[in-house]
Image 1 (cartoon, one colour):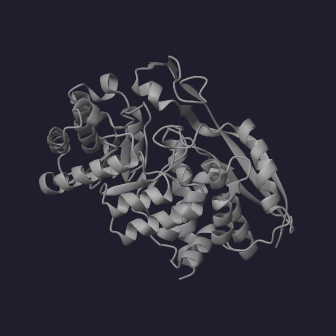
Image 2: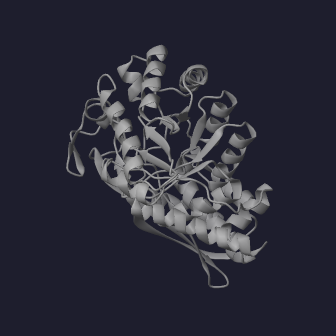
Image 3: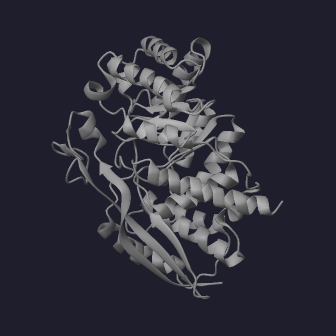
Length: 414
């Protein structure tokens, strides 16, 4: 089977691009927008509409394989690729990606994706933007599945020597700034992990002594007990974007003391804190998280640290895993480029006995989110993100329903 043509379309994502540096520096919330000037290159406002590029591979049997190029909400921060604007990158895709795909025989997913992922753009001397590699790999995976008349999960499992799992992966739902109302949705839908919380501001969300987050996690535990079903004990997972390190001046002892207070407030629920510190450098970030993780292991039970910032690429994931920089690593799918890297990253974490959280961003699409579920069901990460969007219902539905379809098909083969 051959690719006879390629089309691409400008699209929207399930959320926004946000200038993380501007927000951390005090940009004020104004409804759904932020007031203030952007500081990260490429941004024209602190918050702007998320954009995607839809990839369509036209196959010689008339079928169409789909993938969506998308980038994370906080593009240009934490060592990530710059803002992904569709009009700019569609021209790059047409000039350089189309010739690599048109009239190509469809081989296997891994080889074709790695070729695109490693290709050096002759104009820049660098690899293509991670969003491009991400979307193209989705379309390639879909094309291979069409060729073989099978699910995308089957393709990944066969090529990486695994088996499509026959059990659900816990789904992690994220609240956005609606961190109270959206939690109720998560509890009612029995999310395996919640609520993310978007704790990206010291004065508004964390508190200068951490008092606001402490109050919030206590509320979470109480709310779960009040409206949750019998026996429902989700994992609490809060992303703090380095703000805990900010208020304690990166004093590890004070940070771990604070972790104990947070844990005490949630009782017997497992509590994870993502990104407790941000050192603005990969090596120092890994060192800081490794130190904090070791201290937590000896002092705070039922508490885990999750790595995010500066753990972006496949090489980064391996580096953090090798250095045990966190109890769990977020594999932020768009930042890794091709989905081949996501599959390898999950399997590498598992080989190192490090928790694998196959995440991503609210700023994705339905197409990319479904493709990620297939990779997850073939590699069995410990956690998968509900995406796209911050409304809970939509992203949770997309991931949950695709997971159920894969489970039904996999169980039929028994």
